[in-house]
View 1 (cartoon, rainbow over the protein chains, first blue to last red):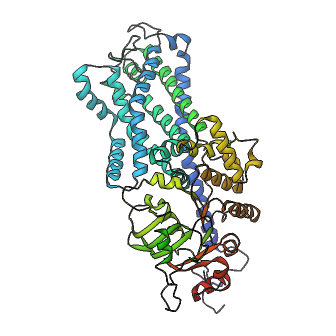
View 2: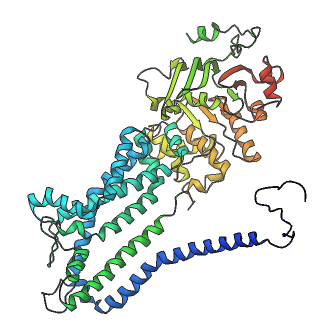
View 3: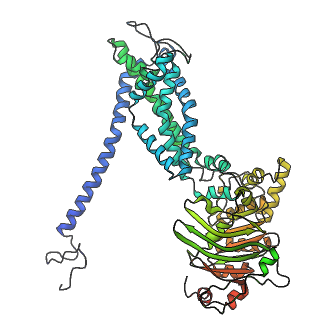
Length: 300
Length: 283
């Protein structure tokens, strides 16, 4: 009992019999349990909103879901019935348009950032994409309005551009990260065989990063599919069937917005149903992304 | 010209203590012509000097082992031969390395062409996430070694046979290469390098991640391949160097301490440091 304390944690007190836990030990154990329990509660609270949203949407929107809802255009104001078929089509067209314009650029930029690593230009671009990621989507809408809509009018094209701008930073950064995850050895193996850098990237690095990039792309597409603000002054919305890229086009989120602010009870119900439909589509895409996340490094 | 090079500059003087003996395999009668010649080659990563005036000769169609403790520069030297270090930012070199008389650092040299002539096998096997067939065929196709399915089939079969892998995989060429065992993957990587028909094969600790049986297969393979290729192998395993190589070069802290016939290096080294390393007193 006379020696110095072995470590700062041991209490050389006479009140601590060797076998039993000291008060201090018990308190430490308690604190640990409480903290771990706290993180568990936080995790549960995190998923709670999704469950509540799904529950509420099912309750409020399921009743209005019927075949007509998927295939019809909105009924004239004040009349019951009608659907959001044109909105579903419009959202698909807008997302496809945004993908066609934004994905090649974003994936190319992501490869550039991954290859250039710490170059000054790369760091600048990386910083700019991070800033872009933080731009409020309504600002992007106003920007596209000022540059495109003012010149050529409300159109599906303008909506596609706005969504493509949203897509760029998201897909650029995920592509960069996925390409960086490809083992350096694999890249060196290709280069050592006498491949050019371009061939190495296209033939070896990209295929190895493919599933990760695809996942990032799907998540980003799901994200922009639900955007409302950038479409308000660009795609504008359209109560009729339209697939003309030069004309205003309907979009599911915009329809939800318009129904929700309308004074008619029936349109409120349709807003709930359309929300349910939209979240269903987004969830389906997210689930698809999860399946694709499997790495090619596990043998088939 | 090659002849004058291998003859002239090295009086092999172990008499001067401290100075690394200018090492060279016997350049006398019947000595093979040189595949790789380095002259006062130095290399820096940023401001850190990794190689210090390396001068050595690597003979054709022989196995040359580079040995030395970790961080001694042997891998850096190996990767300088096919310029794999070019990828690293902030590198610098001085002096020259020649491949069959032609400088690999001369201006205007096409690195892609160089790497076609100098194949490389890495410490960690790195097959492409493709089929076994594609792994071997891809490089051959890209480099124009073979065109058309027939040609390619032939190249793939020959390369896999050369790498002593054909019998194990001939019935599942279309399966993913990632399903092979570590030793098979490494032999696949060797087949992949051979398919491009290189002159020199660089091996960076090719067996260090393998079990003894797979290691033995790789060593037997090296033994068979040296009739056709110049092989340079970096290894941490002294027994391996003694077993597979004809010549051995001992590196220490960025310097070439000595180089000579393997049996001489292992039985009768000229340098105190070589003996100390080989007998396990450090490293």
